[in-house]
Every structure is written in structure tokens, then in C-alpha cells.
Image (tube, rainbow, N blue to C red; front, side, top):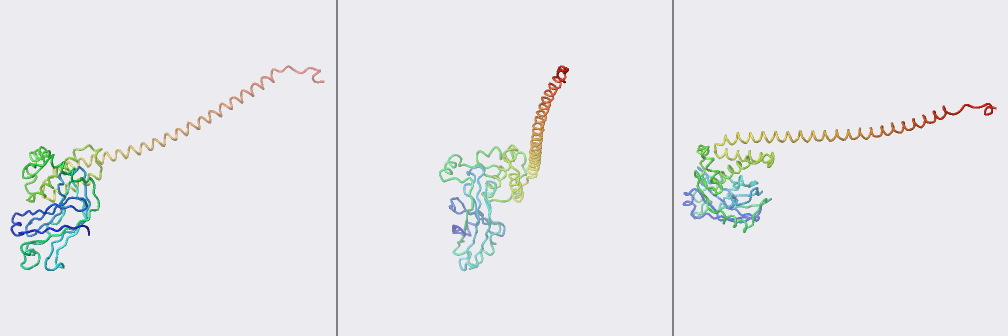
Length: 311
């Protein structure tokens, strides 16, 4: 497929007890990534994550095709592969599989997946498109500006996000009661999705499109699937969507009226040109009539003929 990165998880059994495992940062396609593994019920979950996604510029996106492999170190034919193509963005910077491989299969003695208490993971990535990419120096600048995170109700957020996050939990204290993920990347991702979605809804209608609202709906679905209670946000999104549709209908109506007015003005212009021609004809006829009148009057005033004129 594309460039690959190999992650050897050492002391897997003891690492798994902590539930969250992260790889070192690696660069493929000019983009920074990390792999994230997690114990999830009876499965080992595996995800590809955009590194330092919270520091990337607003509107960044990465389109990538990737394949995750849990390598069977005895027979490659028995390796477990998962392949997909996804857009990574500020709303969803994490993609992967909740049920990459069952723990029972992974831990089979002499099964080939766990060898000398090590698990081998390989990721292959094809970066298809990058929007809003930052080079290393720019990322470092952002990291220097805001390196610390603040815990708000169990979610790590940037200092600039603290006030918004606190206000959300004050008004919707039950929002994340059913959210069970302990993985901090997943938790941070969900919180960023929530804050980004709210930022979108707070913009002027003119600043986003119907397509942006489509993205917002997908972000909302992601939050609901993550067991966030966001019915209040869903209602707000519907309100904004209705207003945006009304605006679009109004703009379309205005454009149609403007076209009608343009046609009508052209007709008026054509009529005015025709009237001008007709007026010119009237003027010409009047001038001709006056000329004929002059001839008639001249003839009428001519002296009568004498006998000499006749004879």
C-alpha cells in the first residue's frame, strides 16, 4: 500500500493491564501519527491517530487509506488485517477498530500472536490528501504556547477550552454519565468534536454551508454513538439547519426575483427603444405634414389667372 510503521508492544501482558497503550510518534506522508491500542471488553482495539491534532490549524483535514495488521509471528497467513479509507479532521482525528482481534485469540499459547510477551503491529498508510498541514517548527510553536491540559469532569482540555467545557457540564451535568471510554485520546477526541460542533453552531449563518451542517450531523452522530447524551445539541442543530435552509430558500428566491427583474428591465428597455423609434416616426410625419400644409397654403394664396394668362 504505502509507507509502513512497525510497533513492537513489549511486555504486552503487563501493559494490557493499564488498558491504554500508545506507540511512539512516526511520520508517513509528511504527517505525524501514533498508534493506540486498548483493551475493550473481550477485544484488543487498535486505532490510527493524528498526532498533536489539537494543535493543528482550524479546518485541517487528512484523507488516508490505511491497513492495520496484528502480525502472526509464526505464519503471516494467519495475521489479522483490517483496511479502510477515511478522512481525519478536527472533529474525528481517530479511526480504527474496536474489535481488532479477540483477547482469547491473541493470548493463545503458541498461537503466534503473542511471542515472548511481545505483539507485533504493522500499519501501512497512504496519505491521499492533506489540508491545513503544519511543518514541525509551526507545531513546536503551538506546543510552546499551550502545552498543559486541564481536567474538566474527567476530560483533558486546553486552557483556552476550559471555560466552554465547564459551562457545558454546568448546564448538562448528565451529558457524559454513560460515556465509558477510558482511553484519553478517545476522550479528548470526543470533547474536541463536541466543542468544535458548538463553535460551528455559534457562527453566523453566512459563515458555513449546508455541507458544513452535514459534517456537523456526522459529528453529532459520532457523539451519540459514543454514548454522549446530546439531545439538547441535536435540537439546536435542527434549529440552525432550519434557519440555514430558510436562508438558502430566501437567497434562491432573491436570485429568481433578480433574474425576473433583469428580464423585465430588458423588456422595458426594448419598449423604450421602440417608443423612441415610433416617436421619431411621428416627428418625421409631423415635419412632412407641415411641409405639405405650407405647399397647400401657398397654392391657396396664389393670385387668380388673368385673361392673358389663360389666352
